[in-house]
Length: 209
Image (cartoon, rainbow, N blue to C red; front, side, top):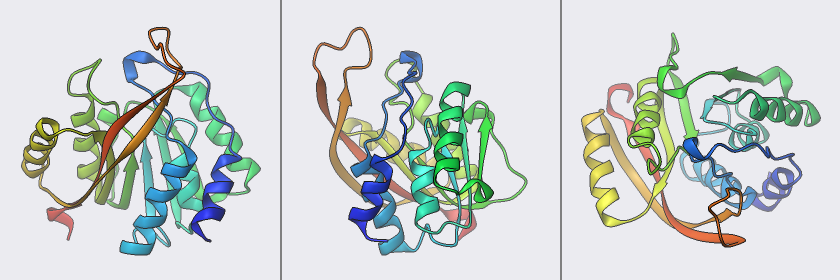
């Protein structure tokens, strides 16, 4: 599948309209999700044939994109049941129900009896609830060989996350900065769309090399 084909497929998905400001739920645009997943596969072979988990999956855009790129099995976990219903409907529409599981639960308490290959996530920025982004990283690095995670850009935050990830037994192999559009979804938003700088981290778990 070409990058453009993946992006077009993700643009056809239903998107969740239920967002909680406390969880800092900002939906990942199809072009960004497609670019992250496609690069993960083409540059590192981290998707096709892999067991992939989407932490805080929302409407499942990363999970479903991974399935379309040939992941062997996918789990999406989210704290909102309404978002998971959208994920389930999307997977049913695309005929990938057999390789996708959707789990209702809190990411910070999620555990598995086995390690998986890859985690992809767009966690809370940790602005409304301090440490929420770190909780996602902790879970991700406890269950996966490789983690792709989106965080607020900025030198101060980058230094902080580098130290946190090192303490968790992770090694950053790549950081890519790009503009992330945030639509007007909360009452305090004034602009129809706000662009914010984010960093995508690729992290390898040193314990599972």
